[in-house]
Length: 171
Image 1 (tube, rainbow, N blue to C red):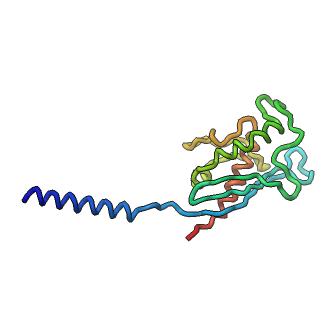
Image 2 (image 1 turned 90 degrees about the horizontal axis):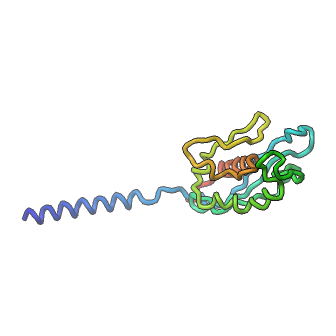
Image 3 (image 1 turned 45 degrees about the vertical axis):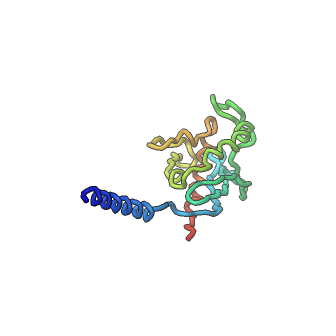
């Protein structure tokens, strides 16, 4: 009889645990959709020139994860990567051509990442709004830097974060 009692108690506890797990279920929010964002600022080298620096992005989200990011042709005359920027203008810089070539693989680094992880990335900006570096904290900031194109990386991250401010939960 004692064995039967222990068996029933164990069975009841197991049932309660299963119900608890099912009740908790997946608490991730569903933001499935496409969101656009941008980040731009005046050209610090020629503040009176039209346009400036910036990037427009389209972020596709599935559930609570980034599915893809594409950089769009910006409107308003600004640009993300200076066409005349040469490799190693300063030691280690990629230059225009190598940065453009590296962008598709760089953007893939965001795929499958949770929206909240990307929102937490901290980008330091100068007073003129030019991104300088990704600030170090507990997250893996280095994963989101395109080495040799730090400002480009910063602009893209800030544009993605701008898009993510527009998330709408799917019910």
